[in-house]
Length: 107
Length: 115
Image (cartoon, rainbow over all chains, first blue to last red; front, side, top):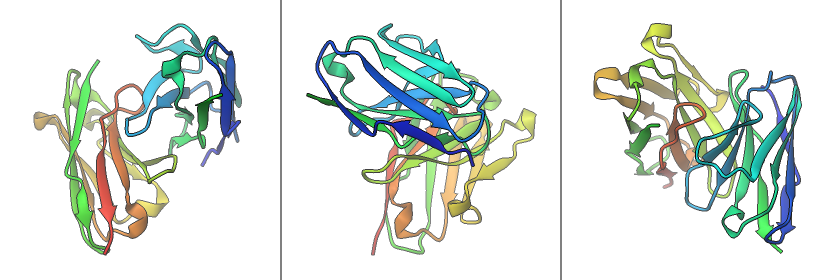
């Protein structure tokens, strides 16, 4: 199975801050990389697919970049509704695997 | 874009069985590869298994911890996905989500395995 390593596991930030989360795959995932946001008690919500494509309806402050094995999710200006846990996921090979998650907390 | 609604979760004793259902709407279910993902309390997301569309063979794949115990099936005329879970263990306790794979997720149904 492809291992997905996310960092940091948690980050404390203030409204308006720029936040960057990284995700590293144990092997090339051919840009089949998605990012999700999850709030307590809710299902994951797709933010980014194919490494850098913004899902319809997701604010443009979210962006994804990277290729091969190294990927980044950036929130350009953190908003109150962005405090949540974020997961990366590779969909290149079965089983699809997730990173361990990054909790974005209020500073 | 589509909607998925799971049902069938509940409390079951170790060794017991449960069948989850997932009703789809808003997209062509018969063409979709469908999956189940679970999340244990306070933990991350884990892929459980998937079923391909009948056009693509209708075959299933599972992760090792559930292989031989869980069975995914689909009823395309009812737009419904199923997962039969047998020989349940305490470590199967989780919220179970059905998903098209990336874009569409259900709200989840909770399975608790406890004596």
